[in-house]
Length: 385
Image 1 (tube, rainbow, N blue to C red):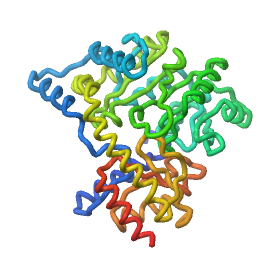
Image 2 (image 1 turned 180 degrees about the vertical axis):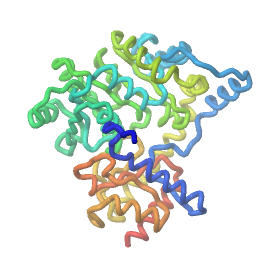
Image 3 (image 1 turned 120 degrees about the horizontal axis):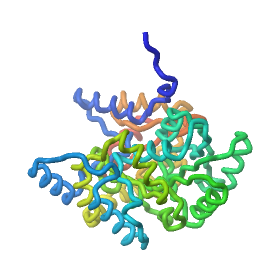
Image 4 (image 1 turned 90 degrees about the horizontal axis):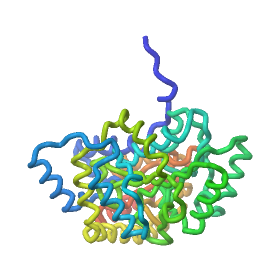
């Protein structure tokens, strides 16, 4: 009998398990409302759909260059010029099969097995799981009110002392999942400068850019040419299922990334690249969607504490409320399962994001429609009583 690798023994991504159960219940006729995953309820922008339809009529969808089409990379360079005032060479841009492929490529190209990489706790669980599967040493750095819910040079120094390691990489998301933290410009610069001074690779996850409601939305590219920036069309652009993202790289990293991408992915899907190129010009439509998230955010900031779910971290950006459930339980996993089974509302237990203290918290996505979010909260309010 063949064996199964130790690298596959990662913790399940519980948000996806919750989504799967919610989907099964919905298929059985249950009136499920999902606040479990960060998936906009809105469709891709009309311009993206029109471009994809036109491409399908032509009938030939094939391979592209491993790092994406020149047209999409030029459009992304124009995006950085218009939004951030940056002159980015399109050749420094790598189009990826979603941001997930971007993280795979970055980790494989930057680090060797055993290297230490710091991430925030609480933080996106796929970081931890991918790093673990690749045999990297994961340094989870707690982020609290004392650190303004973000990584700092001081917290990284402390983590290295306590862990007896020297970091090879630091990964920061702003806006962050699940906390919603937006790391301000000065704090982001301090982190980038610290990494540069200590020869540490700095990976900036910017997939929630465009969804900042408070604070300064700054790209690491504005502060350093050494950052590895990862972004996606999934969130602001409402294109989760299209699986299309991008990276902006220091010039010397482009060819290593390309070599790995050629073998792992061949190329990003051409149809998605065509749609994504058009989506970059759809900000008027997308900002209407963004305004609906802002209204959901304002509603949850007011309503959740009223029903006993205090907000555990800033809701500056992204589209998540990270709430403290200890008034009702010290087992958020069990609470999430009961909530889905008894009132057909899906949310993600905090254990996904914080294996140390996640039993105390739960993440609720407010990317759904305003009517759905309001209905879900009222169901929870009645149930918790």
